[in-house]
Length: 103
Image (cartoon, rainbow, N blue to C red):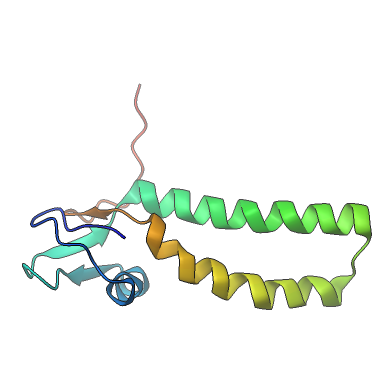
């Protein structure tokens, strides 16, 4: 679970889910506003999407599953992926939502 950048308080899963839905939340311990860091938001979204698309391409290409199976897979996969996403987040003190690349 992520930790507050100010007081190093370990957030609960429930608090991180609220943070991911709203984009910002006060730390339950020190009451300083925290945001999901741009890098962790990008990589969490990337890994969830990549995992789903890769598995669906393999199943569809090699095993010829149809559209009803893919819809069922979405219904099962998305809640699982979204409930595991908070474990990948890191917190930030700033609202900066763009990923900076090093030159």
